[in-house]
Image 1: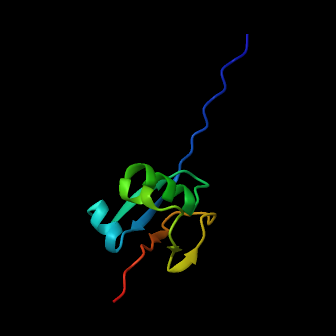
Image 2 (image 1 turned 60 degrees about the vertical axis):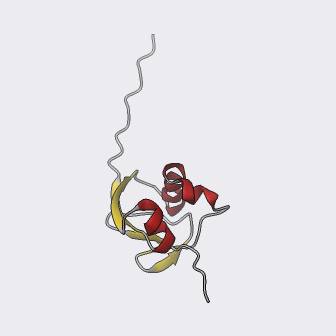
Length: 93
């Protein structure tokens, strides 16, 4: 008889997600603290937001993002205390 495998505990990290313009309007907040798994990347957070906020699902690809005020792609690893922002498209006039 095989023994069940023990579950691995993933402590995770907390990141601050900032919302601007239409993203702020659709979420109803300027920012939030979000717990993500160890090893989570920017694209993982975007995927979670797409599942939670219908407006975000309308985007065919992830919008530009910044981590700690530097542009970051979807594969950027997130660390404890990082500040993450997705930059919504804006209309000019």
